[in-house]
Image (tube, rainbow, N blue to C red):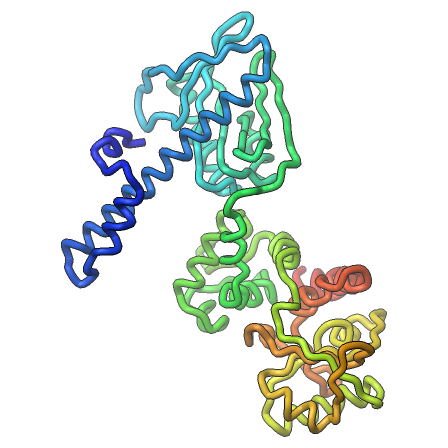
Length: 394
């Protein structure tokens, strides 16, 4: 960590923010200065995180009565970078050096990087105990640490420390930091288009340009999704392209964050049977050139016959008025047997298929929509996963 560089830079983040706001991006000097200030800002944030990490470690160890925490001291490192946190504790029979790597994220890829670096420190500090510290450490990242004999600690209270006579293990503390921003980025409408493509056939390798074209998003969007999935170790770039290494984990986390209520939902009632409504809906949309597809229980019944339903649910792109008029649907606030959803993004129509002349969303979209219905919806989603999606992935 280049602390000497930080010492020469402005101490106030407000100064950096205000200065950036005055830059002219058309001026090369200002452009260079802008990126220089951004780099300084990032260094300052990292330094602040390291200070929080060291404080959290000291606080955690303070609960042990026979342990004395010594101030950080300089230890000779033969070569390479120095640890982000370096301190010494006094045990009843000896002193123990603790070295820690601090990362801004506790996802598996960064945990593995930290573990590898901690293991390298043993060349100069053979008796040191390595610790990975981050704002929040995911269960997968925690497992990586324990498997390699490395401790971990996060800023919400989860930890695993095992050295000498010391053993501390705390788990179950939920993430209170900015992971929501990370989730919003991975499961935003445009990013979700990329996920639908990858999940439809996880075995297929994708070149970045081809994936962007298929998902109808920018190359930058694909790069963002690629990074977020790689951080979780759910995607590994290979010579023939990108492919998911753990599609089940991707779908599970996405379904936990997804709600079909992102769409605009309108409820109606019709005297016709469900089969008649669906057939007429398909005929009208084809005639009017309106994209549509069944979803929810009515869509799942086409793929998994064991699913029963009492309401037609379908995505209809934009022109629902033409559909409701032709089908003579009556808007209601209760007792509906038809729900029409104006999609929050046209990506919901990716990989739709015909079943007996009726369009149905992809199994992935069906799973997401069903999972949002507590009780029977979750049961139907599991049936769909077991009987349709998982066999297609194999």
